[in-house]
Image (cartoon, rainbow, N blue to C red):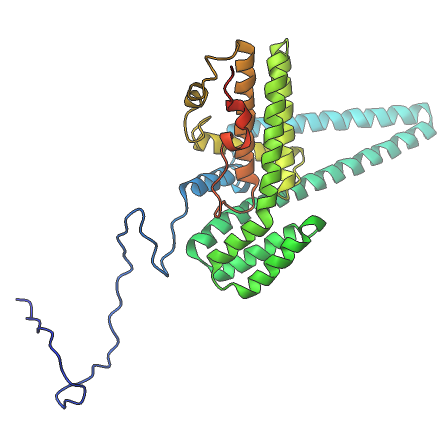
Amino acid sequence: MSPRLSRPRAFRLDDSRVAVDSRPAPLAPDAFILSQHDPIPAGVPAPIDEAELEIEAAQKSGLIARSRLTLGGLVWSGIGGLVSLALGLWATDLIEGLFARAESLGIIGVLFGLVFLAGVIGVAAREIIAVGRQTRIAEMHVAFAKARAADDRAAARRLVGQLVTLYSNRPEMARARAQVDEAARAIIDGRDLIDFTERSLLQSLDEKAKGEIAAAAKRVSLVTAISPRAILDVVFVVAQIVRLVRRIAEIYGGRPGLLGLVKLARSIGAHIAITGGMAVGDSLLQQLVGHGIASRISARMGEGVLNGLLTARVGLSALAVCRPAPFSVDKPPGVSDVAPFLFSKGE
């Protein structure tokens, strides 16, 4: 049988029969049952938002995941090796032929070869630096999400310092950087520091990125609506998407070259696949039919609107992947936020 608990009763502090128990109270279990709208108790890590988990998965699959040996990788490695050997033999034969004709021509050929080799080394170094920079931004995004969920002040201060350094060469952000530096010394709570940093540093960049997405979607929808050939539509849409992705990466501090753009495209593709293809809150069909577009415009205009939606969707995924910190103060923008003109009803 369980011991019988005594009933609570009043007593006097000066009563000689009162004894004080100095033993520490037992620790309460770290378990909380909360409803959806209950506030999270102090000291309990907040769960990471599902959207941030999706972005983290896309980052890992495209930028910070380690390369694995695959059959496709072996094929392309073999082809690359054969092409390199062929180019080397061709260059050797060319230089030998020039020396056979005249020694001066051979020397000029060698000089041109050295210039070409220096250019290749420079381009390779630039690509490596660009990929490393974009990888650091991807890792910073994931770290910001985890630090905010855990309310980790030390991690928040370290990440905020990295973010300020990332934008140290932008004169227009000097005042915002000074405000963040001052806040880092004054704000104790890590989550509040991250939110303040987002408002000070990233909101202006968000507006620029959304402006780029809107402009690209408008150009694509207009040009593809009047283009006479489907192949021109495809070429123009691809060119605009590549330009948009590169521009968004540059806004948030990345400088992707060719290889960095390919890796960034993998992350964007993974993010689109993880978040449900073309859907942004609702399905694309609901977006079209719900705004009365499909029944009010011609077939060519419908193609223009569809291509504009595609461009805006890719731009939003690029924004989510390239942003060095997750959205915490404001909710992530949707297609209707960056390109409302695509949903205007025709007369």
